[in-house]
Image (cartoon, rainbow, N blue to C red):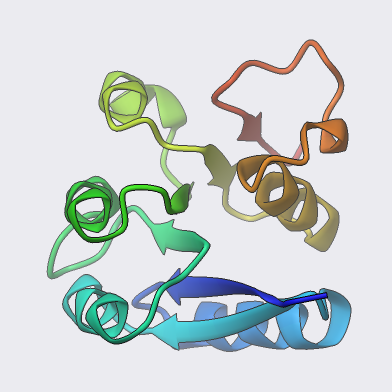
Length: 140
């Protein structure tokens, strides 16, 4: 089975390290590449294709929705999951317009990450059938 390629974009080093380690150790069907900001992520996308972009919303050079818009121009079929500690309602309309494939509210756990990634990549068995197209995964 071919590994799915995931680009992780987050300006916080511990988050990048933890996510890369999580994919390597617990999600062996995925190959994760990390980027510290949106500008470097776009350069990475010019070099190689990715199946999924897992991006933070709040970043200094451009926010996750701006990055998503540019990703759609380079890789229209890539799946995008947005991560944020912010309340999702703050940018819900923009997310729907951008056709974002998932949302993770920080902090999240490995199970929530796995389900969100699987759902975004088309494994809709990862969620109960009542989950909306734009899936919000939150911790209690």
